[in-house]
Image 1 (tube, helix red, strand yellow):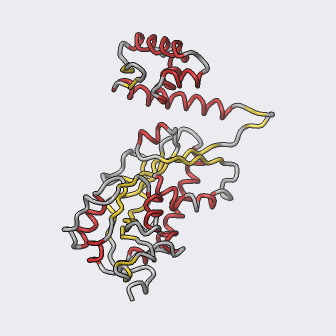
Image 2: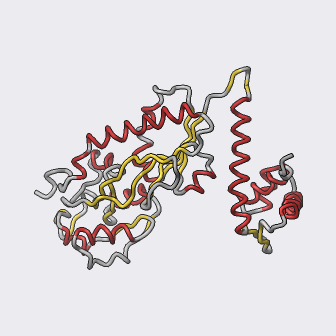
Image 3: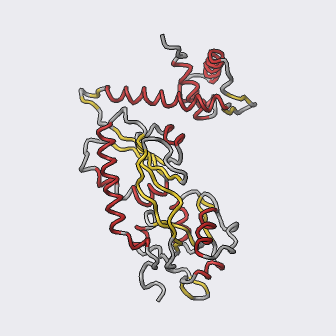
Length: 316
């Protein structure tokens, strides 16, 4: 007999862990906060560990709680998925669903504009696309597939390398210094650098370009590629982009690649197959489509990796 705690206790714990609030968990489950608290105390007694640290009006997960919450959330998601798979409404089975998690910048700037191309290939499939940055994110979203950026190699065994991008600065075509276009590396001494996540990317790019003495500890840090592009288009500064995320904006004339300098990214992008135990046929079909779409894209955009500006006549 499996040694599994009561489902009611697991549901209360998972909801409280997700909200970090007994009150919010109670509202979601249509019970009282004291009921949630009682269920979690029962669960802690069964496990012999503390799952939460309790403060006056707040709770926080312990390390055991963090570890357990990830597994419980995945298990409840599996149960919900299995239920939806076999349940019937009006005598008809629901459409299969493929859940994909990916970096927000890749989704917003590249994938979302192309994913509709997959619909004719698999018209019965419903696709859910979520933002995610790491394995914990993907598991929490209950993803079947993830598009993952890594600078240290494949994070799991079932990982297929998709591409490694070329990085280069981008600016607005309207940005000027003393009335002149941005066209020289030295111009970057007088420009605001817009950083994504941290300041490492600009530091590495400028060092490789031969301008290591620029202070990269200044300039705002944003958490999303599209936000940076919006600020770049508003002439608030210059951003560091790559041939995938910048392509559509460059083609539309909203951004330019002002310098004939590129650097191979430190990040390899992998396609992770996380849940081959379900909808495996759809996983295989989508994986094949994405790989072909990426490869075709690279063939048609090789020029963005060349040491040249875009538009080609920008510096003239």
